[in-house]
Image (cartoon, rainbow over all chains, first blue to last red):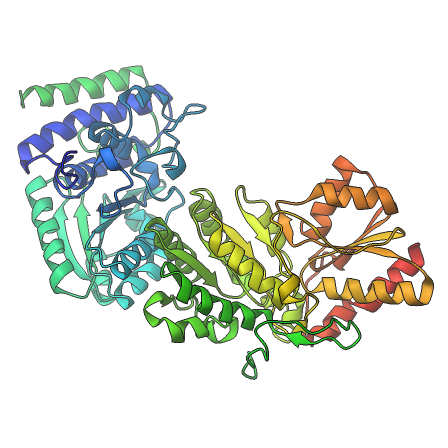
Length: 290
Length: 331
């Protein structure tokens, strides 16, 4: 069997990853357009982060999806499911033939990730605020069994308004789960408007620092910056006794100009014209990579 | 929660059962002791609490296996979701706090993270129902059976004494899937012998047979049902079937229907609201399988209050004398 540690990884190359996620953006939009339901803005803001983890960082393999030593990923902002599904299809966990079934009856591709239907997804998410606690539990379990596997949890910034997040932030620091890394998709928008107008988050990084975490802040669409942040988080996983938070500054709707920074595209499907325009824009960018 | 809890005198219970002068033991102490035994037998057993280890008696496990015990502080959503995470990497988490908070404050985490993902987490709260006593209504879970029973894929178990507690905690550890195991605060009568007790998964336990009325009880009210049945037999020649609903879900409608067909009258008794718990499930099962006149003793759609457990059982009409009076007025 292929070495599970390397099977699904591509050699780190920002251009390769950018070309890949540009293509995955079309898959995301195709899913949501076909379903006429879903969250394009939220998916497009975090697909670069998810792809950077699954293709260039985490140890995992679709050939042995229950491999006990694999690194774990939790999409705590479960409404960005199309971004995760696009990555899992590309990585070989989900058959690409499933793509048109998003949100349809009897599909594995539920509106929010359901672990009982999917390989590579350990806990169901969708109700915001719960994933980080699950990640703490995974990290504690790995430590009990002396496994050095990593745990990555991706949260939305609006999600930080959930009280459970801060319960988990305290727990992770208290239990010294240094192999746990939380990534905050800081796109600054939520359903009802900007995060600062709905209920202000203020500066996110100092809050995590105050709770006893290591903190990094990066451009969440810059693959080199993400790789450096992941390197630093990996280094701290070994050298510090604190969990790490990466505040990833992102653009909601990234890659589709008319969706970018528009709260209205949080959870709305494009119509035919909008879909065609979006795909044309992405394909034009894709052409630059070939 | 007041004075420290005494360890149970005996870890196995073999004395002859005298319902008038029963030997008493605390199921939560049995729970704590059983966790320690399981901890020695299986290194994957882990325990989580939310700053109530001294009350729930998970403290015994914490002392024996400090590295496998996680105090999540006063944070019940975090408690449940952390247990979920531990289960996904092969651990068997037992989670304790008061039933009010495990079932109420954390309900959505139990539903969406544990049950929806079919995770192998055992939620075993103590201090359920009104026998919690003096702390009053804010801490008395009279809705937890209803809240847990409506969640798909959830198993709901209610031990009636320390013997049943040990057996069912062991059953939970050996059986895959999400479970809610409802424990209580007080020392309560031991009504089974350790050597004779066997778990029958998903089954009602027929504790006593009679043909005049069916009394269905669950948890600590099973003792009261048995005591009432004894008095009804000795003093009034009324013979009751006493059914112990060990499993609220899956519910054994077949055994209930057979008894109801025989007696023609069913009375439920629970330390819980009459809505949605034992009374609820019995009404549903009888309605579908064996329509039979039904009366429900329990908390009558109102809140609890402070008082001793015994005073509350009397006030809310779920002790042996209330059962006797109800049966005498009916049969």
